[in-house]
Length: 503
Image 1: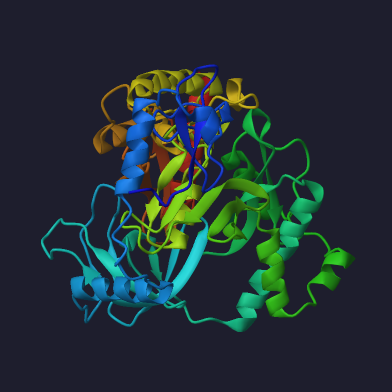
Image 2: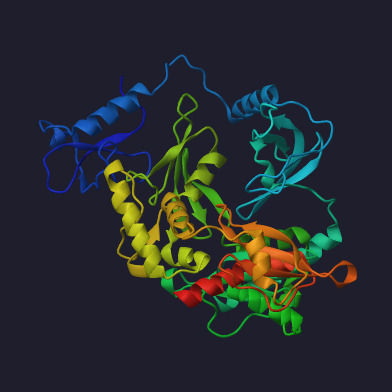
């Protein structure tokens, strides 16, 4: 049976064997052996040549994956309804909020009662919906998921740590927040055309005071800030994001984060709320979207950056209707996966976007050359398995190099492994006793991977209570903060300073 996925014979290098490449989107590597295609061949040119074994088997596998012709086509509405019905069969109702005990990575997890309005915040995006149960075995210490019916009619089982109770919408507050963000992004992008990856800077009480953002890429990337009060940081920027965040907080404390609203911005902000929302979406260069470029074919982009493609292979495809491809995927043929809906395929392409070596160095506070060294090690170990870690491209050399998402996670893990046993709370208490003899309530703080960053502690009680921090290596605060949350925020910054001083 012939495959319905379009393919073409191709040549690799100067070899005479016939390989095969997919034609449903841009694919630079063969479907079987994953080698770079030099040129496509016509059927006449390919006639009489020996076929590459892995490519031939891959071609046969594509044909075998085509379902029987009698399988009825499924509309997107039917697919969504089937997905919702499957979730409804798996969930059990929740009559009241349920809070689990602490785990290594979460102090506690909250599952909301049925009918609760929630918002999902993950990877810079927000999505609102209503809960309708939880799915899990009901056994202790077994992770469960919250069922959410989204406002757009779709539904999912969602990890509870990204869900939050949605507060009632205050139109006036929403308008003020929107005006502040549009003004801030406009100021930043007008001064730095490459401004991207904006992240909010909030006070302990939740007040937003600024955004930090990144300009440039690779080793030349710098971090800056823009306040909610119309001030843009000057100078050459900071090497690490946390330094820009510190500078923004200092500007707020010293009153240097406020300036008159520029006239062009004041005129801009008189637009209706829906216009401002569209404007903000256009200014947000971090939004990932799928743009239809042909029948059943989409380009996935972030801002103006091409990230990959999605191809609709038809509702009959058992492995997943939507095929996702990205040039920087872990697989050398660029295949990301097959999914039942377009949104999932789009998100899979976005997750395959590479990570810069310099960005990992900035996160961990280690020299970029050390990150590159570990990336080379991972790449050599993975190569025999057909996986790639370090991306080879003319523009990606030295500390400007990029690695796959999977490799970035492995590199972070290897560089975050502790060199010695963890400091205990008693050892931390003894370390600070000379300065804070009555320090108590030591609370461990850890990274997402579980590595100990250090401890925060309380000195004093009631109205005189203040909070400090001590890193896992023993450096501690010589000034106390009003809130523990402030000490928690300062601890990773101190740890990075400590690492940088040793580098």
